[in-house]
Amino acid sequence: MKKLILPLLLVLFMGCSIPKMVVINMSEDEFKKEHEGAKVVELSERRTVYYQSFDGLHGGGEKFYYFKNGKLVLMDEGFHPIGSVLPVPTPER
Image 1 (cartoon, rainbow, N blue to C red):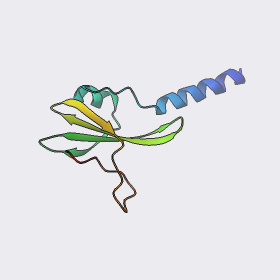
Image 2 (cartoon, rainbow, N blue to C red):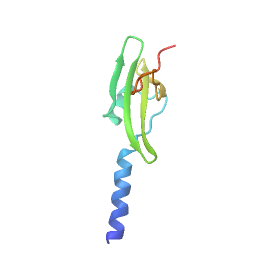
Image 3 (spheres, rainbow, N blue to C red):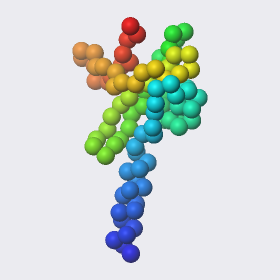
């Protein structure tokens, strides 16, 4: 019985740390429902940017999610300015 419980707990624990599916053109409301841990890091007339860090099977990671007119248009890891420890959103083009 112990041999069955340990792998099951491990799978449940690892499953909780994997980010949920995100697709381009996803609505901002749907994203917010599924990614409650995401934080707004930029809010302007042109775009809204969310940041989320997560732990995964192969280490942790960070993602920035860029919304325009309520739709997801870009996802990336941002960039690290010289001398910065934390990533920042990619500037608009």
